[in-house]
Length: 416
Image 1 (cartoon, helix red, strand yellow):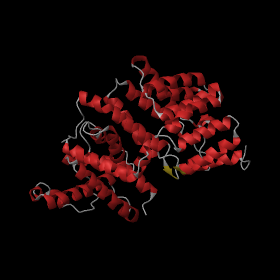
Image 2 (tube, helix red, strand yellow; image 1 turned 120 degrees about the vertical axis):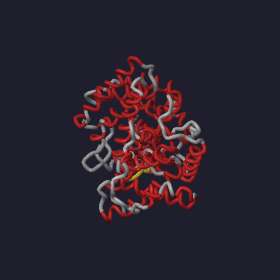
Image 3 (cartoon, helix red, strand yellow; image 1 turned 180 degrees about the vertical axis):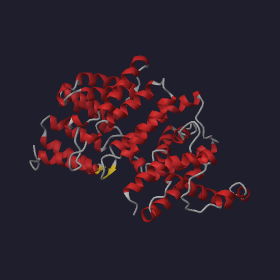
Image 4 (tube, helix red, strand yellow; image 1 turned 135 degrees about the vertical axis):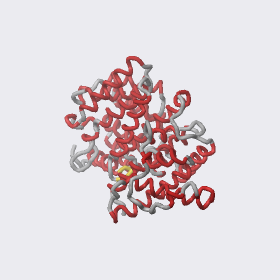
């Protein structure tokens, strides 16, 4: 069985190795398949034989061998071009060729823009990038989109085929093309970060390798586009959100909600950087959805206690956000803020239209927020039923345990 440490390392290395192969050889579809085979070989061998001296080089070498073997079988004329590669041992641990490090940039960032090619619909751009760059499984992406895994698998397969058919090149796009793809790139990074900050399934609440990679790529993107306010806003939002990570779990790994967190455990350096980023961006850039979300996070971060949070300001910011980017998840968060200012019944009223929205009807987050507001309103029986329904619907074990504990408290089975 693959150890968690090896799984984490492979997830981190996968987009880097894919970037190396696509830069060298093109043919995204074939390179992605070769990398997956190399990852499988590593998952089998590394736990038994130990890590090679150069894990990334090992994967590059093995994936290249897989790729060239495939080409030899299909196109005999390629044999001369790859003769050196095929003489290498299949599982060598030697360093890769000198050009493994990309000249003048990050291969992963190039890969990110390639996956957001305009030949793809936005949904396919995001799904493919989550798979190739974020390292999420097809099942995890399907959960994020609320679609069956088989349908998501087909979507990703078609996306890879369309990139190949479009003849996309592995280079950073021109300024005009870059602007066209930037919205999808930002959306992808946001989804990768969210999956790491609040894992949609499994035992762990956090997947630090995903949040770290999303933040790293956001920093790279900001270096590339220092005058884009939304790039700065997204990086600020990630930093301000990730600053809470150490305080989000208790001694036994249980989820601790924002209002109950020990703010002394928050990462003050990340908060200061995030606040400075969004404050500066809002002085010269028209506000966009990521900047507004970062501003909301900054209001929370600057409150010394939960009780001193400036909820009226947060409500005002959510109104702006709902105008800029109306969607059900914004409404869910807005309902909580409105409840803190105008009372829980006002918040519950905002949730009512979401029952008829196919994106949220039956979703555990809608049920969990409703449970919280019913709890605040003193409706113990309905709140308990909603907590239990949300617990049954979530695939995150820490979330499930938290929701079950809230329900038990209302039943008198837990601490009040």
